[in-house]
Image (tube, rainbow, N blue to C red; front, side, top):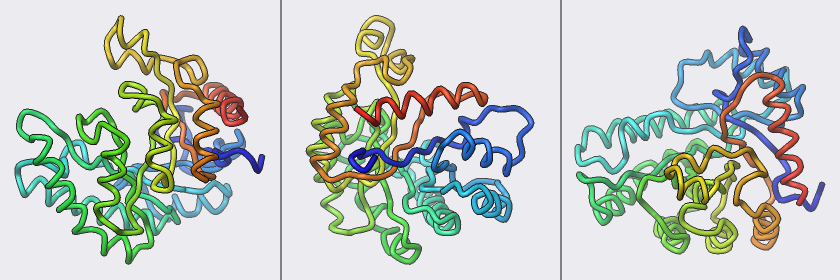
Length: 271
């Protein structure tokens, strides 16, 4: 167990689809299935006191939060008011993360599209994220940047350069193993990102399904049945010294589905 780079496993709050469960029941279910934690979206409308009580009673950690506004109000939008809304959501999410005892807040740094060029996105993302680093310092929560098919930061060396440009200990990378298979090999990204990796997202991807059925169909694979070389991922993580959290991010379901996902993860993490 000590040689497993992915030695703590969480999943996303919305993956729990067992009907009729209260907040505490969700936490207890995940603890019973052997999960170590669960990640929440933030800002959110969940009662803080109930979340904290459920966390403490279940022994389940909340290792990180995912910004819930960055798609609706991208940090690189041409409209300054849209960017301001995203910045405010980042500050609130950092506060939520501190209250939960989380160590990271995941943020998609921006979107390249017809209205925002690549160069504009790079400049705006750099400028805007710089504005919240002081708040990250105050909360003790790190900002974890993730690439989510946003047509931005498409190579591992560029991703590393983006993080290094801030020269700040409170910003790093949330590496999604499945997302980058469209662009290259996960182990190569891990090699390039190295110590910048703060956490890992786990999902699968099929290049054959992508090529024959369309890009998004590539994700329609169960853990361990796609094109990810999990042994190579684990070895690359060992080489860069990563040891910590992995969060499963796939379609969820009831107790039986979640138990199967945990078993699949355990097999992959042991390779």
